[in-house]
Image (tube, rainbow, N blue to C red; front, side, top):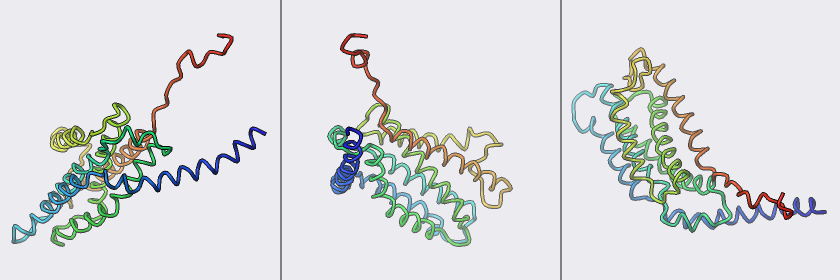
Length: 235
């Protein structure tokens, strides 16, 4: 009887969670730091347009570096995506953290895709790197930013992790080309024999970042205290 009742309550709970998630769309959309995304996106478009604005013939290395700078600018803005001053309030709703974070990402994904298309088109065609490969690099930078923010939220319950994550991401982007070993080349130019191997490494980084995001978006399991584990007979 108890099992039947529990099975009957499951659809009710799922319906309640879906309803709560739909009710969260508008409040979450209001708390998304659109200003940070707009600032990062604006700087990124400016970086992508620099080769075209400079005039004259644009070399392929200038095109790929312009798009890398654009991707970094947007990733720095996306580091603020999980900033939520009302985190302690929304944590009480019957919607899991992973769904709340996924909702934020879903709201940002369409404008991010449109922004990246515009950034790629701003680079002159003769200097434009392979779109799939450079998009892989941009997606990895974005995933790393989200992984850092999700880790800060999971580890410390930070309400505004964006500033620290953006600073760490910027320092990492500056030091990575200088400190990465030659056999782990990431920042190669089109036509370089290591281009294909480098993007194999980018694929591994993207997979690791996505796994980190998935793990950090799940609420940590709260350990039961010894008192709650004891039976009434204190055994």
